[in-house]
Length: 420
Image (tube, rainbow, N blue to C red; front, side, top):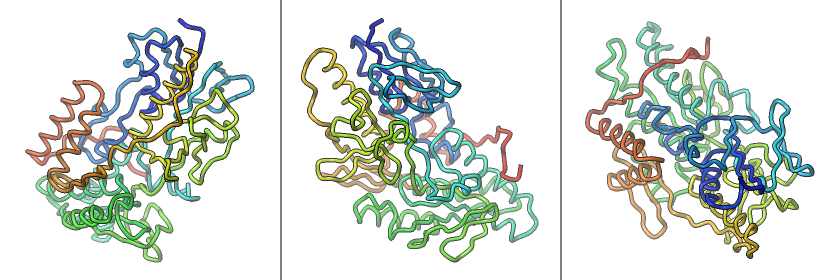
């Protein structure tokens, strides 16, 4: 064990990359997370839409470091930082001293001042979110099968997704395929193919971060799946009875929020500036201003590229930042000059729209359709952790592709409907 202590808060992509890249450095590491698992968040929507099981995209954090005695993993919740005393404050009153602190605490969904909507319109950031959405989607069909009132049945068979970024588009596409291709032969009193999937976007187009031609392709692919896309009007209310889009009320019993994110309170813990989404504004070396021994990375950090545009809050960016901070720490301990400022290397943007349709923008090349879907799948399988899970996910996708049957459709938890 070494005396120099690096504390990492957050076991996401950035935190794990940092811990992995510090292997062999003369440090001891404490990794703190309020959950015991690392989550492969890019595939979280597939758990929510019955394609994958939770165990296929999440792994115990402790398992990664069982052969590294210099790494201690703690299941705990951080509630603050005492930068004067060089301590992390835990819920329950415990403190953890550090020499270098790295905050990689991620983000959650933002309701733009309407947090009261969360119980009826869950976002999608955790496994708990995904299983809640999955339960509500599946139970909507089950209750519709029992319902004799046509108006109530129509409301049960209406699914609204708020936000047409990658998560919203991917959710809308797969819920539509679930209703149109997987479920029709399994129900007797309802026609699941007539379910309405509404995708709400306050802006003028879906997937606004992509090139316009790719966005246009995604729109056509969604329309081919029967998705009802509403542009130009924000959601103004959500309730157990439905959603109001602009001034129009839509009876709807299942709402999913995919419209925005809000960073963890790291900036408040450190008393440093934050951007509009609450992300801590850091310097070019990802340090908190005025705090030489504290770094902030991933979705928690507001980082600008050389052209002044923000670094996107995606997994490759977090991994690059974790790797960069590892280099800074190792250079400091070796008495060598620090590497230059952090530079983000964009590796491309990807989104899928149901089965056999996707878009990919690598900058130098753009792909769409069937080929893009296969490239998207191979890329995600490659980045999964461990051969076992790569094989499991690949097999699940192959089975779904051949049989059109979604395998993860069990309703198992107690909290099943909002009324309970």
